[in-house]
Image 1 (cartoon, one colour):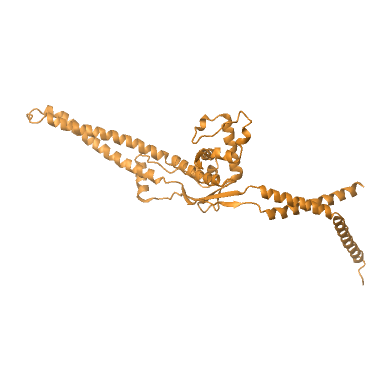
Image 2 (tube, one colour):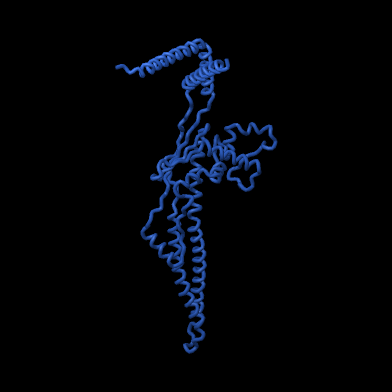
Length: 361
């Protein structure tokens, strides 16, 4: 027995497929009739792509990789000495955390403070020394556009200038440069959180700027780290050094006093002991100062050991070297891509334009 309910469905499917084929054929013939417009658009797009690639300046990429220092627990004799000193109420410095831990370092290196400090660092090109900020404005030809603007003409950024004394224009320009670099040209990344190796990547149309900025940013970060991390230990060393020098001076004075008192009682009658009391007092001063000096010298050396323990955060592994990796869109690739994109957009325009005309007809 034949299932009559299935017959209409099969016919509808065959009709739909036939209509689809006819539609495709119709659109094909329509686009074929417009081949000259599509080819012309493709040629124009290809020429635009070729021209863009021809005049586009290459981008240079400078990459510096470094290892982050990780504080290890324990530390042997030094940790034991530091622990003992802490129990006696002596603070000999401790490791800094917070800003230098984990991914915080990545954001720190892109902070406005360090980027601007890097921009105010020197670079020497063709025997001329200037700041990286001035060099950036120079090769980007920004200063040429300022020649007709009295408020901006003559603005520069001296090397290691006092940031607090900048004018409003200088502050605004430096901020714009640093913001633009961080957004598009500076990339600080860590491949894996389990690996303490990070990389700084700087992209620029100027090869010398890319290399100098990359290396200087790493250097400024390292210097800032050392300054902050070892600040407490450094202060302890300075205080203990002053105390040690003061006690040593007192001890030398007491020793001189003992010798002077001994000279005064030479061949003195043994019955006159009161004359010997100044020498006895000075001898007590010598003993007290000797004990204090011994303790201070011990603490000073321990504090110096703690200060030496604060080693630089950044251990450079690979530095950028000339010639840097150069990235530029190929002319042939731009020609093909531009032609294809222009042709495709023209086809879309023709299709939607034809559909719109049919709908409003």
